[in-house]
Image 1: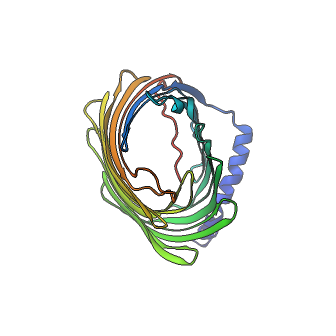
Image 2: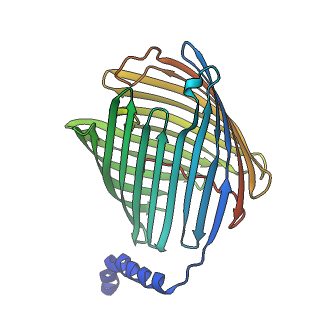
Image 3: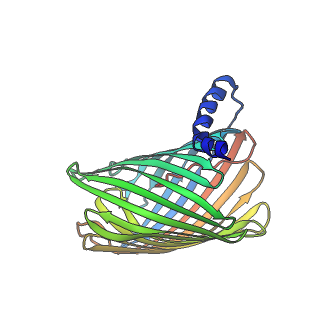
Length: 373
């Protein structure tokens, strides 16, 4: 017993050394895959004046997968046309490049990297982000994890430059106390730098608990104090998920946290409530319903957004699919400190995406999503 316990703390280190040796000696066994996914969007926005937008978004995604992990990269650009507002037309109104990498060095050690580039040419706005992470299984029921996050944002409009830079990291430990319960404790620190001079530091400690009421139903809560420039506020996340028997799932989530928005220097206090129901009528057809509500506060300004998206996905074959969604939302108020001519907007957005994949398993691959962390 004594010998066994003495070796356990060094198990992950031995695993890392073994991984390096295996990678040097083992030939790479992987397969590549490519997909195109042109997307058409028709949008109508009303804020005292109705504006129509037609957008075509050619997209290209390439994936490379092996038994140990995957690498997926995508490039998408938006060609936009505004009938009656020719000055807003743009061949490449927005460009996006996204990357997702996952690698399991050993059964106990894994790495990940999510990165993205987002640029709006009409208003000269851009965002670059990267989120590396690491997971180490130190004991059969104990997991250590950590990572960093970086984002650089800028907006140049009407000779006014706005820049934001965010960087930080987090570390945590996760413990499975019973077959149905998992607890976690993590710390996250973030530094915000706005316009090169306004620096803000934020620290948050979260205690988490996940409970599996049934094999298909899970509830997760994460909560703790956040300290930003000496001010204390709660940081809360609640998520309920349920897998459906015929395929699909139900998700309901709420969060109260801090965030930033492109072109708006300063921290936004955000409350969001969202839900999603995906239901598979058959192997080929899946339906989607996703309502949401958002409330943001920045300084003395408040913005509220309410909306719902409905749609469906149909797989003609393993490599050919069609996704159609229609979303409506309403925004009241703006978070920009400069008063806007109108602060009550209504939008309706119809999106049609066609996907064709080649190579690999033959199944379609979706572009990665640039997420916070």
